[in-house]
Length: 305
Image 1: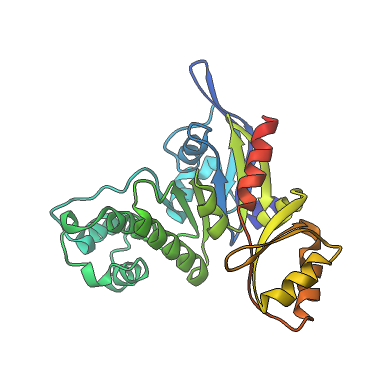
Image 2: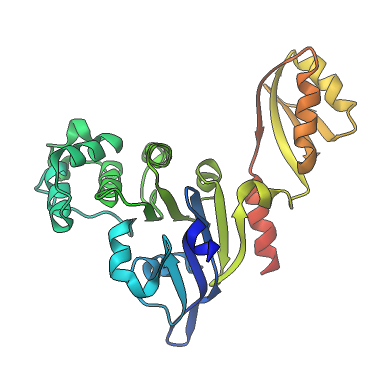
């Protein structure tokens, strides 16, 4: 019962077969309310299949799920509380961005002008709201799709590969708006992706799926504790003082001076203590970043499959 109350999504042994192909196998997933949850896996691993089940586009072969505390048998009611962007956003090209949203919003009774303008402002399209969609870039169309998913103030957003097909600038913009929506709204965001750096930058929690089976799930910080040693880049001045301190510190496994930073290897569990010790030295710490930890965790899980 507590899982249903505390989780935005709770699945129980979801299976899906297409003929003789098992797309999902006993998928039991827990998505905390208020999280930005990354659903990670290679192409064809089953990410989109689960999303289509959760959004009612297809049915599971077996298993159950609940969304926002409501069981899947109440799926008609659930759809009112879910905003979804599945596949690439598609709109009437001859209509403006505003009129496209108004047409979609009218179907659900949420076509209030102030509500639509607020959405367009949140996704960065307010100044272009009266322009025809045929003049929009692919990134703008994808953001309009994100706006469509926000109609009716859903408590849960489900986004399937939201940056697919976007150029680097479009990807950055989409990630920025997703983070902004999570910060400004009481909304849980569940997004699928195969881009590890994207998920590491945005998400608080993740699940990994390979060949239709879950390999791991939980808060990113908790999962990384199983990595052992990690690599960190430290931007510290004066670098010579910091390098001497780090090279002689028992917590540091290796220290290397790069062009503008110091690169160290350290056990993940020792990072907080090292940073406390470093802060007590006569140095200024401008940044301390962990690089590609999700990639290391992903590869470790993939090797077990």
